View 1 (tube, rainbow, N blue to C red):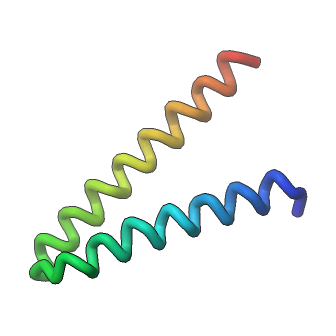
View 2 (cartoon, one colour; view 1 turned 60 degrees about the vertical axis):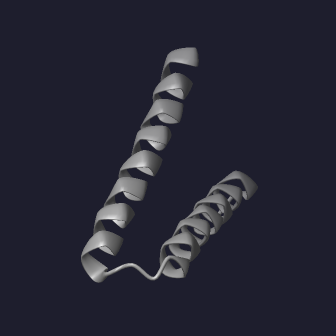
Amino acid sequence: MSMGVGAEILWFAMAFTLVLSALVARRLPMRDWLKMALAWAAIFALLFLAIRGYQLVAG
């Protein structure tokens, strides 16, 4: 594993921990918790796809 891959894994783990802690701190019902978790997953997926698309276009 290269240093770049390790840094990406660490970044995603920290981002996931941040989102998870925010959801747990709100003490929402499980249904609302799942909806918010799916919304956060969609946000991160779109961000990842945007960055990856830019990397492919930029060269």
